[in-house]
Length: 232
Image 1 (tube, rainbow, N blue to C red):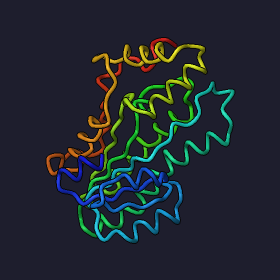
Image 2: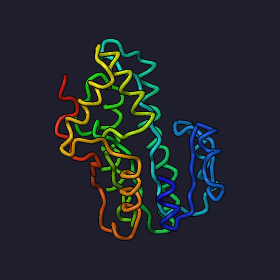
Image 3: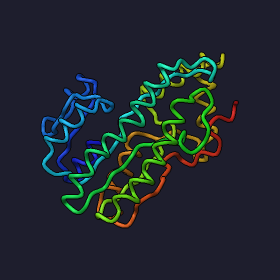
Image 4: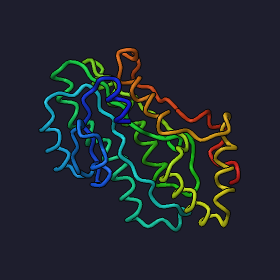
């Protein structure tokens, strides 16, 4: 996502808990190691930011893959903390900067799990549904100040994180990784998973002047998910 904004001419700030990932970012970017769910860390981060045109509240973790009766409360709370509270904290500390400027765009990353039910992923689905409610409310609150808010709902995104999800889901369901992959792809009209670039392209569009009247919207970038898990 950062590459897309950099190519569009934005100065990029990137945050993560993963120090090696931050070290791999281009030297022109501003990077900070911080947990999205750490309020003190997030407050300190935004104190360093002089101005802010676009916020992408993108931090997230997959959470546990298990039936509802097997989900530990500790794992539930960890998943909701990063996926929902992290989005809340980002918006909380971005809002004053954007209000001062009289403009801004906040893009939350939800998921197709925030549109459909998602078997064996209850904490993740609950958090992603809540992110959409947060976005709708932020759009209403901040619209009078010239600030827009939207939510992107990615489908299954090709990459290491999704591979981990599929492996855990296969183990939970007694299936193979290939069967799980076929289930995801088979439930999409375009019969394929999306890429990180697909998500970045939408984020850059929502942050641009071309989307100046787009706010309060839930936008799926998923190739049209017909059924999130047809094998259930």
